[in-house]
Image 1: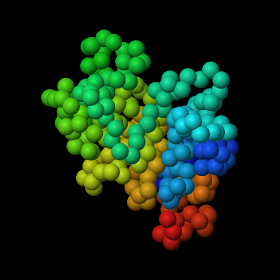
Image 2: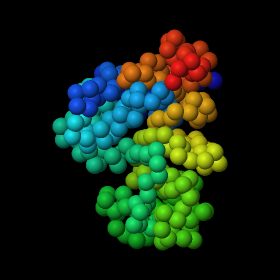
Image 3: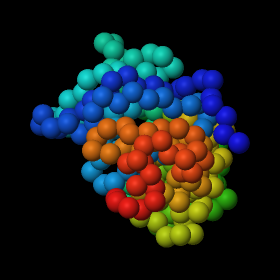
Image 4: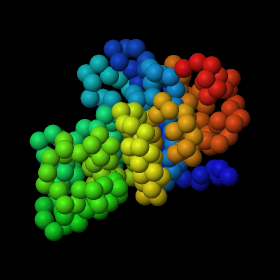
Length: 257
């Protein structure tokens, strides 16, 4: 049975985002419950990934990008004056559609990279934190005997789990996943889905996916975007069985998208 949460880790208020003056996200007000998985669904080009990138200030890295409204992390505006975007991205980690291990680094150094940026230098402490992150990424047992080998020698699914381990190593509060299984085979996809279920115990997970079955399997809450607008959001079970908006019903039943 779905239970409405009492605490929201992330909230947006009237959030809009654009490129070259063209709106990609329009006046989105919503909230994401702590220690849960929220799936963001919708057809291609509806603003899902742009919205996700606004949640850790990656959207602003494009010269043509603009934003209005507010994004609140634990009720603090992440776009307020004085907020350091680099420090923010330590609190709000992100994993992309295609695995992006650092190609010239070993498995160990891929995970350690973010830790070093945050000032960790002692080898003994680093070893413990790298192992912890790889265990969280469900990868430790597969790589513990080749930590100093190339990350590119891993399979695609392993590389994506390495990227997840790298993202959680600095102990973020929120983990953003932008279609993390889109380039993976079914077996690797299943491993990631199982991993996401484990990660919600420690992190608030927000995941963009094109796969409606995946959204139904892994999320407790779902949000539907269409033409840059948030059409409907709510507990996943009710969302798929009794959608409130006709556009949501048309999308989840396959009549468009």
